[in-house]
Length: 358
Ligand SMILES: Cc1ncc(COP(=O)(O)O)c(C=O)c1O
Image (cartoon, rainbow, N blue to C red):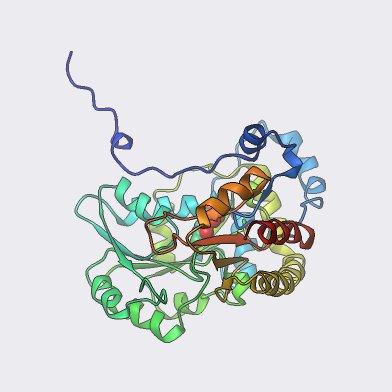
């Protein structure tokens, strides 16, 4: 028998999926509603407003969604104060990352990112057989080595920037970002998944530079992670390059409709972000009172120094239904945990469990 080509997935890096809430509940013998996800940076607010929007359209699921997603693109454009031809929709920023890699990277290509950051940038790059250059932050203060970033950006086809960055929670100042964009020979992607928590949107970089793509999501501040909807803002020419590799219907009709409704009423999101930011301050104070060092955050999560027992603490918390994010024990964040800011009673449960453990 001849050798079969089984596909790049056999050797390319894969995304490491987290165990589901159902799996965790079954593993520790807990009721599912006792499991709280502090690891996904999602929203604690219910989406009880959404069913009324989808009920009429649930009767029309025999047809495909309109491939141009014009109503969704128009709602996103209005939200950002631009025109629909600058917007490309995707099934979350995750799909947009894969589309950007597909459009601008391939064998012999090169992309870079400051690490640690969102892992899909490296995975998407390497799945396309392109080289990924990780530029590590300073292991002590987690600052960005600017000179190395500028040097690398000069020869990269894609520079992945996460603003504010997951998992460090901080953002780069405008002067430094402009420098990176001006040094870059290729496309600069600003993943603005947490933008609304930072009170910024980075749109001005698209207005000034034609090599910038800013990615937005409905998963974080809008509290709609289950929908799987995101969108990019860029020049029409870069939008056209992404549209060329975009599948015709990766967002379901119902998701597109709910997302357009949410974008058309941003006040609901803004009120919720306001509540969450207050809770972030209260939660951070509670963690500090336990003697933990909390890194300042421009997001809906906190990166917290727990010490050498961070992994043990994460395992113990998970056994009681509190799922937090730990990092590679040998890496620069091995002694830290990342906590999503959730509802006050959920954060209290975590503070209480930490108090008993530490
Ligand atoms: C920086 C960053 N980008 C993208 C995503 C995924 O976003 P989406 O749900 O829109 O695919 C996440 C999710 O945690 C993230 O942290």
